[in-house]
Amino acid sequence: PVRERFNVVFVLGGPGAGKGTQCARIVEKYGFVHLSAGDLLRAERQREGSQYGDLINKHIKDGSIVPVAITCALLEKAMEQSSSNKFLVDGFPRNKDNLDGWEKAMNDKVDIKFVLFFDCPREVCIDRCLSRGAAGSGRADDNIQSLEKRLDTYNSSTMPIIEYYDNKDLVKKFDASRPINEIFADVSKAFDELNL
Ligand code: UP5
Ligand code: MG
Image (cartoon, rainbow, N blue to C red; front, side, top):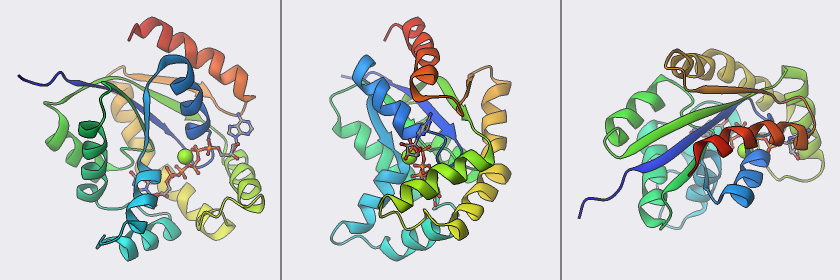
């Protein structure tokens, strides 16, 4: 039998905007499966036999973006292996290469329901990631040098992707500088309407 299409919600926003935090709440309340592209890449570089460890490390530290073939394969594998049919794809697609690769591989397999866009000022992004680093996140990119690069990449490469989806009327934008619960109250409205 033909598999049902995967229902996908993309979750975008700058470093530290709160993508992972809001996704955890959505999982709890709406039963989605959370797939953070960054988490999948961080796990892949630890996997024994992975050829991509050095390449992934370099991109993460430089705040640049891993080639889509690697990221998309990790996302697709995670979806295929799940028994769920509704996914939060967090932190992807981040640039044109990601978008093109995803559309080529996944267009026939997925339904994009909408795109959550957590809009957060640069200074707030920096403060949150530096605090997280100081609290012992262990992330190689929670330092000011990497953060400046992550934010530049976000502005130059990811914002155009958000605009691409906005032109398709798929973007739901949230002021992510507010307290977590306030943001989640608005996010909840989008999922209540979705009925999935
Ligand atoms: N926090 C969260 N919400 C808050 C709020 N409303 N008020 C106050 N504090 C709040 O939150 C960050 C911190 O802020 C936490 O301490 C949290 O408690 C607090 P979090 O929810 O983790 O934010 P998030 O947006 O998920 O931040 P993250 O750092 O994960 O975002 P990035 O987009 O930078 O990281 P990601 O893991 O997606 O990517 C990392 C790198 O991987 C990229 O730079 C890139 O090199 C690579 N990558 C690819 O190459 N391709 C991909 O497709 C994906 C990643
Ligand atoms: Mg995250």
